[in-house]
Amino acid sequence: MPTQRISHTPDWSSLAVAAILLLAPWILHYTSWMATLATSFSAVILLALSAVAFAELDDSEAPEYLIVGVWLVISPWMLGFWPDTRALLVHLLFGGGLVAYAAWEIWGVSAFRD
Image (cartoon, rainbow, N blue to C red):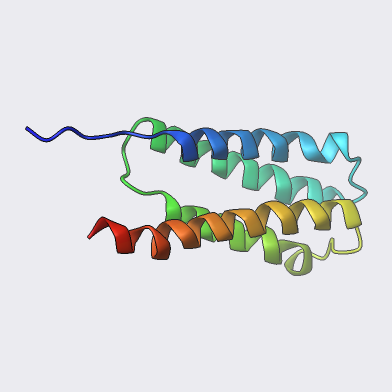
């Protein structure tokens, strides 16, 4: 029987990112309530994805991370809170990080799985 190596590193990372996103509006004092709402919504989605990953209900949550990352990057312009530079910076940094991680997981690591 083959042994299966289980790694929960991305799950812990997404949990940490979700916690930071939940605290960011109050620590950085966002000036836009829409930015607070968008950041909190994204954090709750990441918390849910982490719970699913920890429960091992899904083999790969990378496509979902890609969606959340893209949402974080475009939401300042879609929802009109781009003038709030603190919120914009948080969304671009964490969204870009999620997109990079998801792209690496989907396209980079999948080549080594075959």
